[in-house]
Image (cartoon, rainbow, N blue to C red):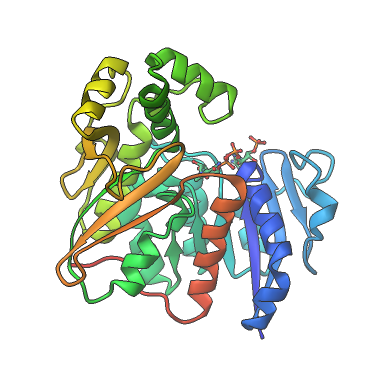
Length: 336
Ligand SMILES: NC(=O)c1ccc[n+]([C@@H]2O[C@H](COP(=O)([O-])OP(=O)(O)OC[C@H]3O[C@@H](n4cnc5c(N)ncnc54)[C@H](OP(=O)(O)O)[C@@H]3O)[C@@H](O)[C@H]2O)c1
């Protein structure tokens, strides 16, 4: 049995999902030879240290660690002072400066710890530096959950499609936009009406600009460009048009001609824009679903679809990354 001692940084929606999934899958992990022990959880308010393993029910009912934390150490001090092998980094995304996640990842990798993350910001801002640090310290940096949530995309390319040259990827990478466009097309709602409905259902933030203006999708395009296509791309290199200018009339017209309008991110073209997708094609998924078409030289076009967000779904992608590190089938995503 391989013991993996895990430090979790960030205890919000995804952090809670990670604690729950590690608990729920303890037996299954044991059956494949992994003893995944969560030894610390850190948020803004402090750290909960449990050298023998966090008991999930002791913390899961608490929204933050306030009143539960037994140490005031910040993440960096935690990595330097406790015995841990792997850091799960799930703090908020900032694609301008990457912090606080970028600092956490640099610290963890420099101290020889594997990093698994759902946080796009650091990978958009400083992918090369993080990947180099991982190589130098002989550890893994895994980030399946940053693009398409639970939809297997990076691992599919890394492992199953190894040997193929990836010619391009085109996809729907933002569930909020897809929900709004789906409702506008189905119900003939104007944009603002569909947005309000998405906000009421919790699919869109109070400030939706990050999603609807295409910023989130552009971050994912940059991550795919850097990791799969060995490019050196920042957010500013991606040409971005969001969905705020789309009218129900244009969606109705597209539908009459056999098309749906979707916000599509394309790599290596480095574009994010509303595009026509033939109705009935595998990319024409509705509601909050994500989808990605992978164009290859040997396997033709492979399309995957799945939920791009969600507490448990995102934690599932994180668990899968953790397992891939220890099952010895970690392959560098970068192809050149
Ligand atoms: N939610 C999803 O479905 C989803 C899907 C895919 C990817 N992601 C990405 O995953 C990450 C986490 O998402 P989330 O929805 O869980 O966000 P969230 O609910 O806002 O949680 C973020 C957590 O990070 C903590 N935090 C902030 N600054 C910190 C610091 N300096 N040190 C330690 N902890 C700190 C926050 O603490 P306080 O609450 O005390 O500020 C909070 O516990 C984001 O980067 C997001 O883009 C999310």
